[in-house]
Length: 183
Length: 103
Image (cartoon, rainbow over all chains, first blue to last red; front, side):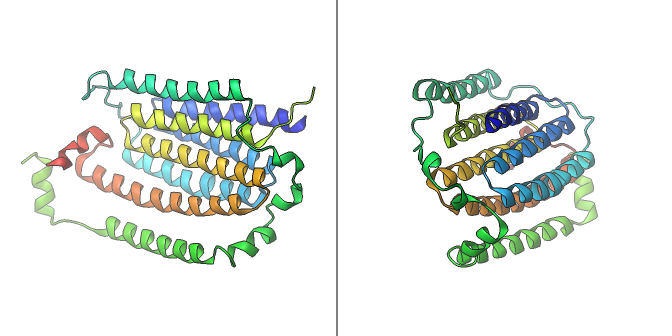
């Protein structure tokens, strides 16, 4: 019963946040909507005993990624109106129809199948088997998944190096000045 | 009558969130907002992973989330660096202006 109440509240929060992300005119509001969704999903992780995942979600997503987003929004400028001219005819209406159809398919699947496509093992299985404590996650992480873990380290190093290269790369001054005047 | 919240509920919520993110990608022009929609979709996938791991009774779903998380973080860092670099040249974050890249 508790799980149902939390699911409805947090699920509603996550959906409201998602709608805010795509509807808000101001990118800062979009970022705030995303923040709400991230926190709601973190609570849903806790409900599924994924404790460490929830903690990492709050620290990495809400802490680091969203801060980076807000930083760039402030840098790029929030006062600019979004260009609403349509380069592809009827693009917005078609996109809206497509998106609503996709959501409608999900809803109709649920209404007819009543979640039947998912095995009901969760009720029978031992809940302690999926209790995501740090210790429980670390053991497979550094045995079965160690290759993926190393690949991840390589990816992060490459991303960091690439970002530094992107940030420090400058063209000669005369060149950029000519481009700004439209030549 | 007892309503038990099964993994299917979480997966349904994740599917709707994913559809919302895809819808945002289609209708928005601001590169930053499009990036946020990508984050939304990645989060929906993470929620599906956790729910699937719970339904199957093992921890692999939760481990997969970490790798998705790392890829998302790397993608945001590089993507935002590109947006800032473009903004420095063009003073705009609208993806329509980038069609000039096509040559």
